[in-house]
Amino acid sequence: VLYALRFPGIKVIIFRRTFPQLRDAVEQPMRAELPPGLATYNKTDHTFVFRNGSAIQLGYLRHETDVENYQGAEWQLVIFEEVTHFNESQYLYMKSRLRAAGPVRAMLEAAGLRPRIVSTGNPGSIGHLWVKARFVDPAPPGTVFRVRPSDRDRNPGTRVFIPARATDNPSLNAEYL
Image 1 (cartoon, rainbow, N blue to C red):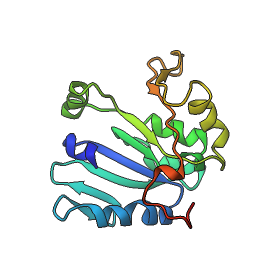
Image 2 (tube, rainbow, N blue to C red; image 1 turned 135 degrees about the vertical axis):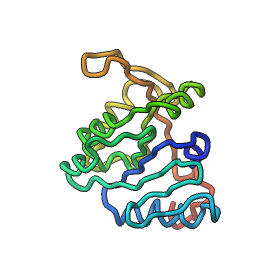
Image 3 (cartoon, helix red, strand yellow; image 1 turned 45 degrees about the horizontal axis):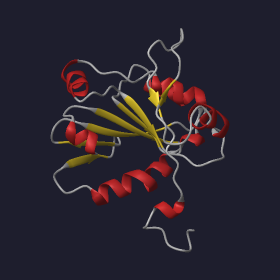
Image 4 (cartoon, rainbow, N blue to C red; image 1 turned 60 degrees about the vertical axis):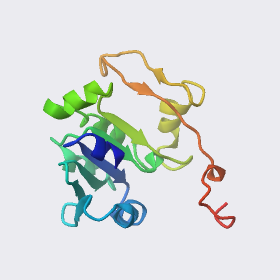
């Protein structure tokens, strides 16, 4: 939401594995927490549209081939909620949808930013091994690093693994812990 407010016209997408997960973990909390008039929610497109032209879309990738639903699309921020629930190929395909042009690109560059992916996750599930190899193993926690350029990615972005524990969240009760 802060990205959408800071950069007018920016396009964001948030992924979960299924739409019911999106509805429960993302859509309903956002609808409850966004102040009235800041953004409107389009139920058909599953998109929050902000007054400044920014948009946050909700998407799901239940099956490997669901990435094809996003062919030709572009976003400046892709968020994977529970990244370990996805295959690496789904992640890399959506990474290829990151780009910016025109005024949005200029705003990002002026802020020292470029299109990016942000992911949350827990250990386990189908993506555990590739997520660990990509983010956890290469550097100590909290260390920003960049992998070497390759033919596949000539200008790799930076990565960082930021560990968290349930006890870091003051809103969780003893039953959850």
